[in-house]
Length: 130
Image 1 (cartoon, rainbow, N blue to C red):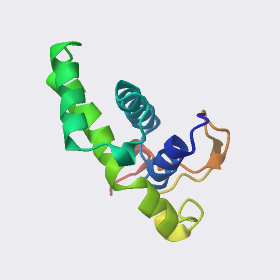
Image 2 (spheres, one colour):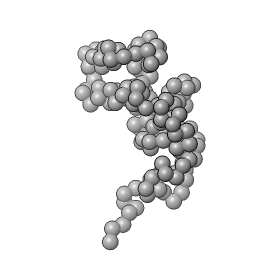
Image 3 (tube, rainbow, N blue to C red):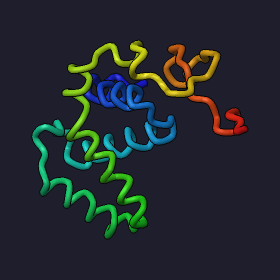
Image 4 (cartoon, one colour):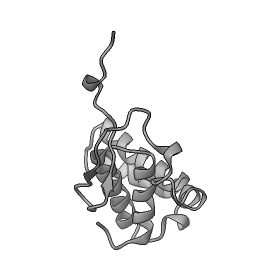
């Protein structure tokens, strides 16, 4: 877990939207890198120019693939468009039935990163047809 309330708010949004753990970790890493690249300035003070400069740096200096660059961009888009508004609008989303999976698992398990108990969706192989 991180000590940053800002990153925790983003984590909360991703959990509410049931992002995969690996996506969550990847996006949080890209968001941290973006903030560090911009001398730890708060993202609300960063704009299109800083995003462009960061993505260009990844492509030119770090020589990342286009898919890696796209992953960084997706994380930045998530950061700039969702966390504060959704977390405020739906503070109990992780507990409310209407936000849960259509085919939830019958058991709850401990989340591997923060220790809270949650219910994952059933794997497609658990659903039988006809």
